[in-house]
Image (cartoon, rainbow, N blue to C red; front, side, top):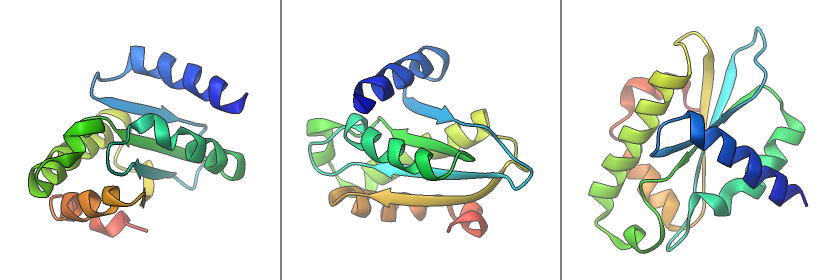
Length: 134
């Protein structure tokens, strides 16, 4: 039941946000937003990470999420350096378009399997945000 409601929530955000990203943000506080980048594994999709997103929001309402969509299903079998660069561009675009500089207090990466390797490559292209990595 919770997964179905999450899918509806993400679909509604998809209509309002960039085609290449799945973003959902929740209520902000004075402390700033903790942004979670959730990356799936081999042959996966951003949809695989929605249950985890739900669990995180149960514990902390002051969060934002980036679920990269540029690398999904069979495309996850591509060259890691290219996939990492695509994901880094997606993350950067999402942060620029959806959050003010002062809003983001920290960024965490939660990955499954090959998603961790892709994110490790993406991080090399995001070093200007490294002070926010948690």
